[in-house]
Image 1 (cartoon, rainbow, N blue to C red):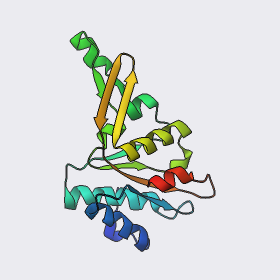
Image 2: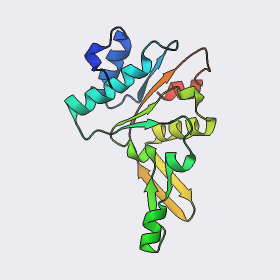
Image 3: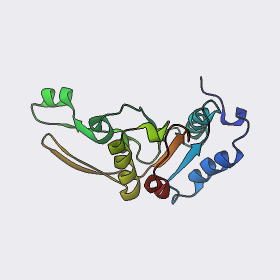
Image 4: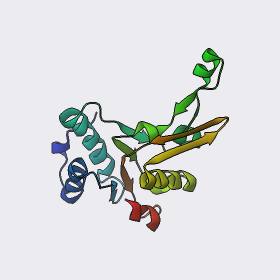
Amino acid sequence: MILPLSAIVGFSTARRALLCTLVDPTLRGVVVSGPVGTGKSTLMRSFGAFVREHVDAATPVVPVPLNVSDDRLLGGVDLDASIEAGAIRARAGLLAGAAGGYLFVDDLPLLEEMSIATIARALESETVITEREGISRREHSRFVLLATTVPTERDLSLGVADRV
């Protein structure tokens, strides 16, 4: 169950930052940092539900699991479609799926370094490039990164923090 955004107490600065992403297209993301159990992830999920319910139901809010593979993040071969068509067919990844919406990463610093670098590169360039297994695709993907961190677990790199 996802709580309504209005039901979450505290986080006034984080809530204001999230709402600013709705009106300022130059903002690249919001990273909320705090101890375990303070409600950071609940706040982010509630914001995603708020956007879908009160702003635009078609806005993508794409969660990224911590064990995400490059194939899932960037895209790759769609095996079912390729077998059916008799030719290689591409499948978009999570980054392309977040185009025009939000990409949510819970505990961002716990992702593999390559995945973090891929997200940061896509965030900065607004482009997802997939070159693998006979596929070469370039897709526009402007998204806002919603992320949480727990400072006692691992620090967020300054390069990623600067991009956001």
